[in-house]
Amino acid sequence: MYWNQQAERFKHEPVDKILLYRHGSGRDATALVDADTLAVATDTPLTLALPCLDLNQPAQIAAFIRDWLRRRTGSAGD
Image (cartoon, rainbow, N blue to C red):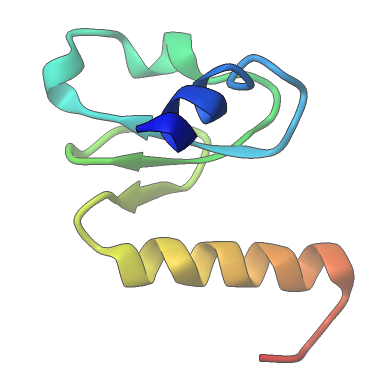
């Protein structure tokens, strides 16, 4: 729980992030996206200009992060 509390403190900071959006939150996903949002991990289909990742497919999210890191660092390593 401590880690989650620490991460929440930085959600409005200008750092690249993947937004976690759950349909049951009752909030509008587009209102949560900011300029630093790389993608949205969600449990419901969304129509956004950003990549939408299936929250229930951790391998898909991991692949997105891996590919993003490779592009960012210019690395082709595993």
